[in-house]
Image 1 (tube, rainbow, N blue to C red):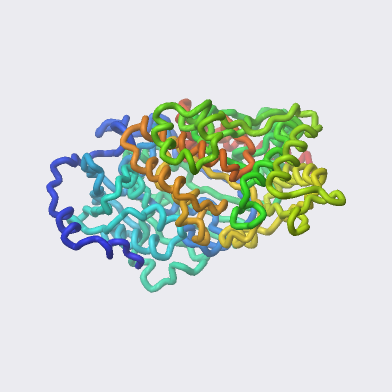
Image 2 (cartoon, rainbow, N blue to C red; image 1 turned 180 degrees about the horizontal axis):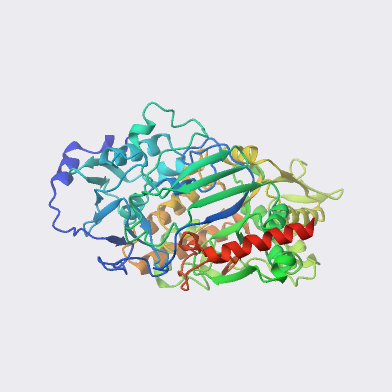
Length: 614
C-alpha cells in the first residue's frame, strides 16, 4: 500500500493515539457545519412515509452497457445500481446541506479540532453470508481502495495518516495535521467491503461475479451488458435502523439497458419499465404522448431541487497545445450560441450556467466581496484582471441563429492568440497549421444534436471540427487516458464541496489516469484555493472560498458552459407511491413503494394497451 504515514514521526502518531477523548462526544451524526438536525432518538428521516409498504418490483432503464460488478476500480464499466449491495459507515440526509448519520456505525466520535474520527460499529451489522462486519473489514476496505481503487480515492483520502482498531468494534482514522474539516464525513462515506470475500481474489480485475455485501439488496441475476436484477435481502440487518426505516421498500429492483434514449422512452410508454428520471427537455416537452398518458396511467412531476447544478460544458483538454491559450478557449466560447440552442432544441427549459457551483449560494456573482478579496488579493498579479474587475457572464446572443457579432469577437480573440484566416481556413500565423479539433461523445446520443450545430457554426470561422461518437468502453478508456480534444463534461457539486475538488481541478490529479481532472489544470493558485475550501471552519468561510475558486476557474475559460435545470423531472406509472414531503437536496427514489392494488390495475392496463397495439 502507498502509505502516506511514512513521513510522519512515530512519536507524533503515538501522541495522537494517546490523546484524551474528552473533547469528542459520541453522536448519532456529524454535520459539516453546526449540529445535526435530527436528534439522537430520531426514528426515521422526515422525507419518508412511516407507513410505506414493502413488496413489489421496480423496473428502470439504463443507457449504454456494462461489463463489471466492481465500481471501485478503473477497469470496466460498472453495472448501474451496484451500490445497493454495499453499506457505508454513515449515510447522508437529503434535507440537510451536508450531514451524515450512522449506518454501519452506531456512534461517531469527532473532537472539536477534527484531527481524527472514530466509528463504533453496530453489533448487529452482518454480511449477506451471515458473518459479522468487523473493524478488520473497515481497515481492509480503506487500504484496498486507496491502493488499488480509482485515483479518486487516493485524492479523497490523501490527508488520512493511518487507521487503527481502537476497541472491539471501534475504528479510528488519524489525520496528518492538515486542516481538513470534511474528513470525518468523507470517512463516513467509506464503502465497507468484506475482507474474507476479497482475500484470494484479484480486486483490480473487472468481473461479473455477484459481489458479497452488507447492503439492503443483493444481485439476483445478471444478463451481461443487457440488464441486472437486485433482490431485497429478507433478513437485512439494517432494515429497522433510523436511516433505513421505510426505505428500500421494493422486493426487487431491475435495470434494463438500452442503447438509444429514444428507444428507451418508447419502451417506458409501452410499459416496459416503471419510472424514468428525464434529462432531455425535448423528450419532456414533446415525447410524453400516447395512449398510456391519455388514459392517465402515467404521472409527470417536476420537483423543485436546491441541489447544486455544478458545471456542465464543452471541456477543453488543456494538455493539447491548441487549447493551452486562454484566448483560444474564450474565442470558442463566443462561437457557441446557447440562446438559439435553448430555444430551438430545449424549448426554453434550461438556464445558462455561469458558475461551477450553479444553483447554490456558493456561486460567485457580481464583483468579489471583502471575504473573497481577502483570498484573491495575494494572487492579483498572477490572475486574469477580470477576476477583480468584471462579473463573469458567458457570451449572449439574440437567439435568432445569426451569431455574427459573437463570431467577429471570436475572430478578434483568435488574432490576439496568433491565428489568421487564410483561404477560408483558420491557421496559425507563424506555422500555417490549420486549427481544428475533435469533439468526443459517448454512445448515449443526447449531445449529438448540440455538438453538430456547434461544429457547423465553427465552420464559418474556418475551423474543421469532427464530432465522434464512441461506444461506452472506448469512450471511458479515452476519458481515463485523457485521449481527447474536447468532451462534454459534468462536474456535479453538492451544497458542501470539499476534498473532491482536488480530483476535479487539483494539480496532482492532472496526470493521474482515471481522475476527474479532465481539463488538465495544473495551477498552484487553484490548489491553494482548494485548500481553503477543505479547511473552511465555518459556512461563511466555505462560501467565500468557493466563490473565489469559482472566479478563477471561470476567467480561465476552461470550459464552454452549457446549462442546468432547477427541477428534477420524473415520469412514472401510477403503480408507484411516493412520500408527500420532498427532501430539499435530491429525490430519494428508495423511499418510494409499490401500491399493490394499483399495480394489478396498471398491469391489466398495460396488457390491454399491448393487445390494442398488436
